[in-house]
Length: 96
Ligand SMILES: [Zn+2]
Image 1 (cartoon, rainbow, N blue to C red):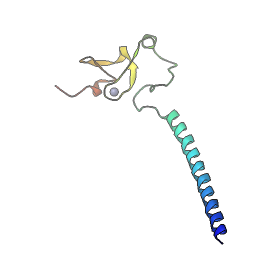
Image 2: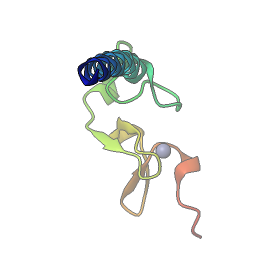
Image 3: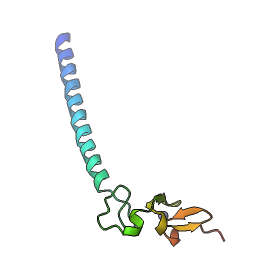
Image 4: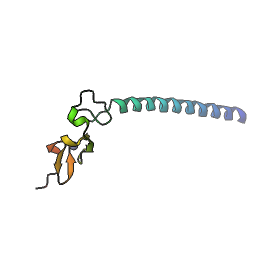
């Protein structure tokens, strides 16, 4: 009697483990594909994206990160203020 209950418990436990593993696996695959297609919503390619049509001038320029949104952009294309780089004028701090 007790052995039967134990057997059922073990089977249920195993089933839950398999279920969890399956969900975890599908979640991991989803996250992976999401990460690949998840670009920053700003203009131009996001960080890590290949730049097949990059400008020759900015291709050699080192990258800097925007202080506001963290977007990486060529140093030459950045908007500079007080020694900090920004990707566009809208991201400049609003202090006067
Ligand atoms: Zn920015």
